[in-house]
Length: 480
Image 1: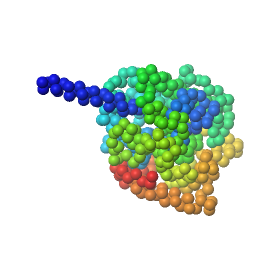
Image 2 (image 1 turned 180 degrees about the vertical axis):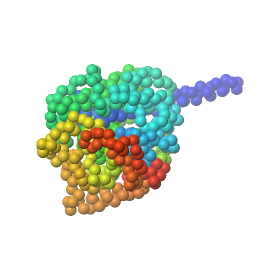
Image 3 (image 1 turned 60 degrees about the vertical axis):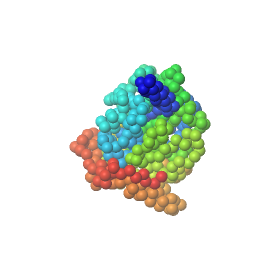
Image 4 (image 1 turned 120 degrees about the vertical axis):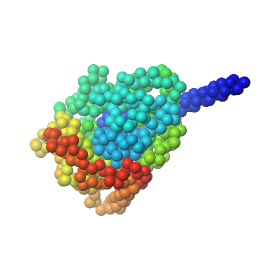
């Protein structure tokens, strides 16, 4: 009798566990590499073929004001996985591993019963291995794990919900000749005003468009597989990018061109108004708390973000008042901080003597050479000339509602005196509460700013922002 009762109890709890697992949503987070928010069809670029992402937006929820914490790839991804600001991760500079004491949200999902897997770009450090049951790390452009997406879906444990972190290398330089998607032509591209419109720049953008198109094709294949397996309705698919396009004037900038990300969520079971648009301010540190809440998992006290799950039901609801971003060393010495509201952007530059020409891969690009040539000939517009400006302003203020490209610095306009004063105060509060510091001995330039040549300082590191204050152990959220 006792044995029979024990079997019945075990069967009950097994049945409950399977039912509970089936109720919790599956989650797929796709993070494109170096893709600007406005380089998708659904965000207004009529020259690019992103038919699958566009359909995701029509059938899901498209966000227009989501910002990553850093305009640099590994610090941005480190913020996403920890739910913390870049200087609070201990990995504020490019290619710095995360410390072991931090909590990673896939790790919490795994402990709660999710099957977790990562495929593609992986450079958040060895300690994040513990967050995944399966880790398929790519180490070169073009080997971003996309061909493993379907295999992971097919071979996952069927009695568990799953979380997949898919990290393709598209559209990071160097470009690859992908035969499966070379559909774009030079006449198709929309040349950003930050670049010169010439044959080399258009060819550069064609390759960039083709990489985005290739990624879009894999997303379409993934969605069809979810449908075929009958799990589409209760699977959350999120698409975003880690920072802006790898071109001068975008990546490593704290303007919208560098830190504003495309952000699309498709979840048939959970989004009440398919095809709607959410204009609320959201920071990438809010992703971890949101996914944990949806999965019914307690949010770690170390996470500085807040859940925006309510926006999936009421997208018109106001969420944040402020988002904060930072630009630290990425091939070149830098210390910039910014606070963004729905109306304004304030940027502080702690190294105004230095230009912001972009990262090394942008400096080595045909598009950059086009700008250099136009500079020599005196043919640059003010927004194109900006990458060469030295000294740069120590402070910048933009009315983003009227100046979406952030071309006109209105710091000296008396009309904005009170707005400037307020955002300067808010930024200082954020820096103080979160332990941000500005070291004197920051990491120096490793390469020439215009020729890309290796300098004697290569491989030498300075002091990390936040290191002296122990910012990686400070959990205060700052202004919201």
